[in-house]
Length: 426
Image (cartoon, rainbow, N blue to C red; front, side, top):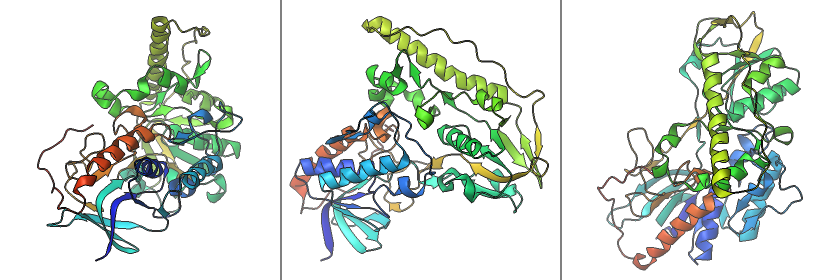
């Protein structure tokens, strides 16, 4: 008989380690399989100058909170990795590093789950998929039309300006990653073009508190998706912890030399074709900051919380280029590199169990799928807004650990096969 476990956790990042903690707390045996090192994506898929988006006091996992001297500061990439490593050591997580899971399938008639790994096959009664939300870089189709001499890098492969050839750099995408990279390039003296897409601005601080404090205080982080069905399609908040944390107004980049462009629509042999939507994208981004301040003000009035008043902000100035740029000649602009800050998609093709919808997204209720023993953890909106972040994943891990513990009585007996029902998306 081969190696058998009650539970295998796939992924040794903060979600997988939080799951390990909650299972250990209930006395349930398990093993964590990590394809690289603990917190591998933080190590190998982030740029050198990355700063954590949220204050240090949000660095908390079940059983470990931030213990430094700067709770309102913002951690560097190295400090985040150190926090996660320290957590692994503190909880004694049974992690096996450099073990990649190539496939998962159901065995019949036993109902166990078979994992094919680079260390050989393992069988498990339960598998928790905790591989994170940022798995496969998204490169738009237009990337295939760019000239061969233009260096193309996804944000997950960008480290610092020194890896890029000389010349100007085009950054495509105005989310948090794209904007931090723009600032990194500016600090290196690069000429930068920014193709602005959908984004949602929030104030770094408002009425004396960080935006994340307000989200926690108002209960926004704990709202389940059923109460906010529209939230799944919204862009992530555009905030940064760089340079002590500051507001990002994309318009402001134009004041320091960045050329702002509309969405990238296509490319010819040497020219880029751009949408005439820059003004609309900037205006749409402002809607987030207005809605956020309105909700905080309403909460303060309702709760009687005593906080400073905030001076009314002036209307955002119109800094959109005039006339708008519809085409951009790469050679004339001296653009030698393009950084695609265009996000990620989930990649669960290695899971050969029928728990996915037409788009390849797992169908589940709070991480519990219709196939007994298969669970997901750490995905955006797994249950609430905070499900995928460091300070929120522990609650979902506790819920799944309880589900696994409740199945302990059937260990050693045939397990239920996949249910034919279709649970709703979370």
